[in-house]
Image 1 (cartoon, rainbow, N blue to C red):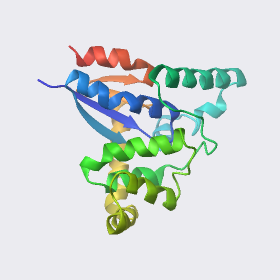
Image 2 (image 1 turned 180 degrees about the horizontal axis):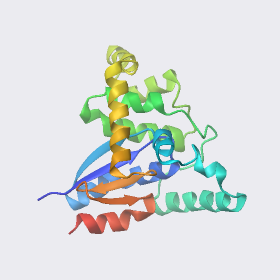
Image 3 (image 1 turned 135 degrees about the vertical axis):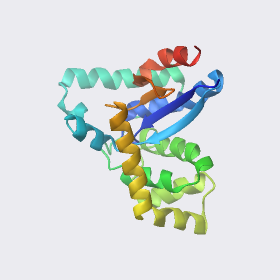
Image 4 (image 1 turned 45 degrees about the vertical axis):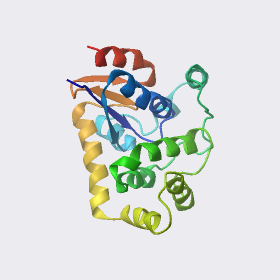
Length: 201
C-alpha cells in the first residue's frame, strides 16, 4: 500500500523552501502520494505561543550559524538560494493564490513561488509578481484574473484557515513539517533522511 506524505509549508520559511525542492523527488522515489498543505505559519506560532518570527529572537551567533547552514543545504542539493531582503514577508495572498488553483497546477505554483521568494528576491505579496508566477505555470489572461479574484472570496479564505487549523491539530509547530501516513511527524528540511526511511517501511 502506498504511503501518504503531507508537506506543511509557508512560503515565508527558507527552511520550507529548501525542503520543498526535494519533496516531489522523494515522493517519486518511495512511491508515496505527496499532499501539499499550505498554512499560515504565523497563525500556527500564535496558537502555540511562539514569537511571530522566531529567527528574530535568536542571538546574533545563532542567526549567523543558521544562515550558513541554509547555504550549506542549498549547496548540498544544488539549488539556488539567497536570503530574502523581504523577510519577514506577508505570504497570505500567495498561499491563497495556490489554493485558488486547480489541484494539478499547485505543485508548479509552489515551486515557482518559493523560487521567487528565496532565489530571486521577488515580492510575493505583489499582485504583479503573483500574476507573473501564474503565467509561469500556464495560468494567464482571464484565468489569471479569475485566480487572483478568488483569493478575496470567503471560500478561499476558509480553505487556508482550514488548512492552518489542520496543521495546528496535527501538532505542527514549524515549517517544513512532514507527515507520513497522518501519524509520523518530522520537522525540518534536515529530517528528510528519516522521512525517507519511514516511507520505505
